Image (cartoon, helix red, strand yellow):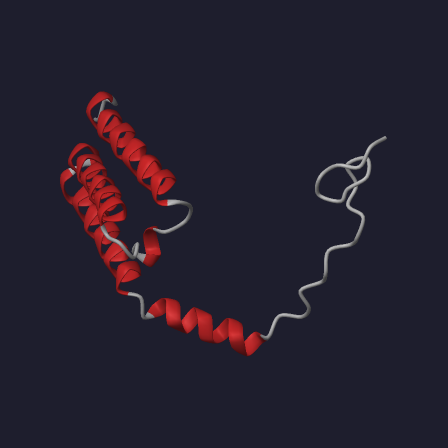
Length: 117
C-alpha cells in the first residue's frame, strides 16, 4: 500500500505521540483560582440564579422565557465581543453563537408550548 501524505502507512501513525508528562498540581490550582476571577463566570452564575429565583417565584413559563432571553443575550455577547467571554468560549465563535441561539429558541418555544399546572 502507498504511504499517505502525513507519513502514515496503512492509516497507522509511523511514530508514537509524545507523552505530555505529569500534571503539575500547583499549576492546576493556579488555573482554577484564575477562573474564579473571571467576571464572565460570575455574570453567568448570577443570571442563572435570577432565572432560578423567577422560576420558583413566578412559575416555569416566566422562568423559561427569562432563560431563553439570557441565552439569547449570551449568543449576542459571544458574537459581538472581540475577546469572547471566558464562560461562553467553548469552540469557535460561529459554533458557540449558533448553539446558544438554538438553545435560546428551543427553550423559548418550549416555555410557551409545554402545559403548566
